[in-house]
Image (cartoon, rainbow, N blue to C red; front, side, top):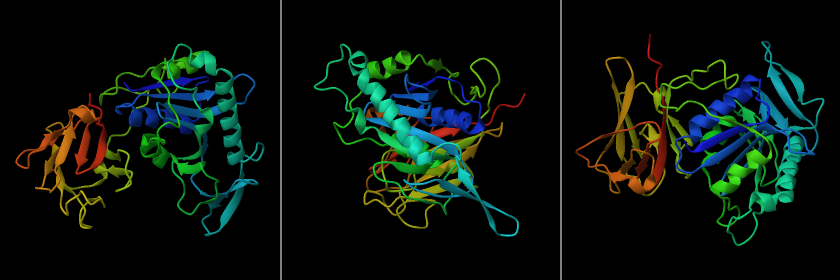
Amino acid sequence: MTVDIWFGQWPTDDATQSMVGDLYRVLQPQPKHYTALFTFIPEGGLEIDLVVMKQDFIFIVEHKFCEWKIVGGTEGPWKAFEPKPDGQFEEHTMNPVNSSPFRQMRTSYENFVNWSSRHHEEISKDVTRQSFVNWRKARSYVVISPKLHPDSQIEMSKPTKCLGRDYFLNYELLQSSIKGEIELTDIEMGRIPKMLNLNLWRPPEFDGTGLLDKTSMLTGAWKPDPFAELVAYGHHSSVSVFHLSDIAKKVITVGRAPDNDLVIKDSSISAHHAVIQVDTLPNGQKFYMVKDSGSRNGTYIAFNGKPDEERKIDPDNRFGLKNGSLVRFGSVAFTFLEQKEQPKP
């Protein structure tokens, strides 16, 4: 498992609970280690929705649920527009009691950065490094669940961003910062939640039959809907997430040409580079096999998700994918994520 999830107060709203499950689903198979902190309050501060850390990046998040068009920016309140049956819109002020999502996000950023700076010696005790962590290189986000409405008009000042939850989880979290901006060790990431007196959330091993606990660590269970998808592994050459399970075909094509199902606009990709074959077992469960189509730069697979263990796929063979596998077409890589149908009793 490559993600540890900690929380101060277990979230009771559906949007945040869903965020916990999706965060685990996306990050658990990644080769890099992540530490996530949910709904916690540093001493002397206000509640922070989410902080995600890895060795070279810190994400500080203000999390909101809204399915409607949003208009807002760095100044003034944010407005959400609820569509009505007559084609008109009813205007709502987001967070009418509190400050705007942008201001809340900036407050969370300052709270976490200031707390970390005050405790930097304890966090980095006995850790060998050239200098202390520059906490102000952390990035700040307003994340909208389940996704940001395409007609939304939000002005943000860099490096802050407003993103839909789908884009944030399946693309932004997999990015890396400029070398040297953030340098954290697993020891430091492990100390921070303990210093904040947070609780560790340990779901069962997510192997396609495990259950994520939705309401607490002891009671209740959430069964994720089945899915199969390819998540972009640090590149801009294609969609950030490609939903294999949404395509009702037995052969899904991959290549640079626009007639492919998954189009990758990169010079290392052949016009018709590879195919993903979808087979069905007798119990009705699908499984996915990758086959190279005689591409110029090859197709590679790391079955266990470790890039240094990848092997080239011979055009005469095909290789299966499991949850967490890494597949690379030319120089463009994806992580395969899958949740199978729950077995019928």
